[in-house]
Every structure is written in structure tokens, then in C-alpha cells.
Length: 311
Image (cartoon, rainbow, N blue to C red; front, side):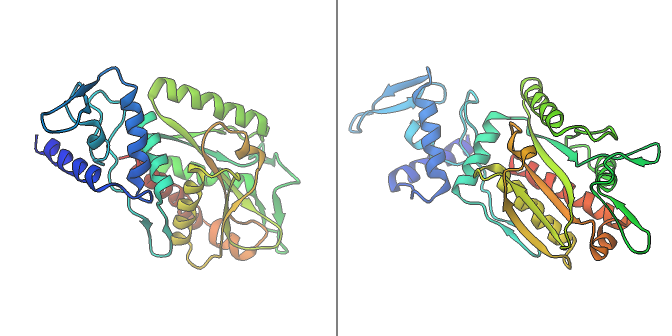
């Protein structure tokens, strides 16, 4: 009862004073109200000396005020509370949470009440009978004879993620086989399982595509398509966590490019390039046992931050 009174007071205040269009709650309240106005439980009401108003037939609250209380929720579950979401900070970077992003998160929370499934995809192939299946591509031999196989290192990180992640994070390895299966098949697998998770578990499957770079550079970067959506936030959170874990490595920032593997998936996702596998310094940092553990923890931390956005 006390919570309802607080929501009524806050909603009435926001309604009477008016919400600034830059306030994240402004667009959220409009979307909530549109849902309420189409609901069969809305009713017209009036109080003597006050102008007529529309109220919820289930809880009795005036709708124009109710939708402007951030922690208010629909009594039959058509929309939910929006807790305060602050900028995501760590030692090195701040991920900005603007009005559009808060609205995206609120929409995801309403449509997928049971949270995320984190689909993790190790890029390229692994080892079969001692042979690197993606050879001679996606590998590099240094002068001392040391050879780095990108697909093998990607799988080491995924294996560590699966072993170290807490049970409350739902993770699915989308390429458990060692074969370098085609991009088209990977995408089809993602899109099929995304639909299944929504239907059966009420969860949104999102993609973490894991790669390493090459070409004589150094550092890490993340790619999304040119669309402005939740994928951008995922990439920025990963970059922030990567920089926290590898503070002496160059952050090459968030980039946009319509790579086939992230363009064709029917969900949100990003492509992470954790290091350059033809850089001796990057390999020393990332491909040791300690480096594998750190890269895995970056992904686990990223998933944790994303999950907490929906709490």
C-alpha cells in the first residue's frame, strides 16, 4: 500500500509539472499510455470539481499519472517498472545510458520477462586430429616457430567462460564442434534457437561473436552493424570491461561495419576482436593461461552487466 501511495504521488507530480522530452521517462510514459488506451480494462471516471479522466479498471489509478511513475507497473503485466539506470562506470570508461537506451532496455524487459540467453560464438575452426581445420588462414607463425591459431584460442576462451561463469548466467556455446562451419549455418542456428528461447522460456538470445585480429596492429576493438540499437550498448560494455582487464593494451574503440555474421542474425549482437594474433606483445598478453582466464572473465563480466540491466 505504501509503495502504491508513493507511486501515485510521484506520478501525479510528474503529470502536473510535466516531463521534459529529454527525460528517459518521457518516451516510456507515452509508450505505456498507448498500451493502456488500447486495454479493455480502461474506464472513464470523474470526481466532482475535477475534469473527467481515464483510469485503470484493475487498480483504479488515473492512467496519465500512473504511467509517469517510474516504479509503477501494470497490474496485469502489460508493462513493468523502470528502475533508475545510471551510467555504467568502471575504472577506465563510462558507458552512457541515454533516454533511447533506457527505452530499449524497458522494451526488452517487457517483451522478455525472463532475461537473456548469451549465445557465444567462437570464430573459425579448431583442431581435428592435430590439424588446424582453418589452415592456412587465421593463423600466424612467429620467427621463433611459435604458431597461433585464432580458432583454437577462441575456443579456449569459450571453454573457460563455460567453466567459470556462475549458474545464474544462461550461456549457450553456438559452435561446440571443432569444424569450421559456414557462416550461413551459424546464422541459421542462431536465428532458429533465438525463436525457440523466446517461445519456450521467454528469454532473448543475444550474440557475443569472439575473434582476434591480424594485419600488423595491436589492441582490441568491437564491431556492430550501422543500425543504432541495443547491439551498440553490448559492444561498449564489452570494450569497457576489456579495457579494465587489459589497461595497457590499446582500445581501438567501437566501430560500425556490416559484417555478414552480425548483419544477418535476427537479434542483437557484436563482434569482438580481443587482440592481434600476429602481434607478439598481444599474444603474450592474451594467449597465456592467465590471458585466457582474463578474456573469459571479460565476457562473464559483460554478460553480468547486461543481465543486471533487466533486474
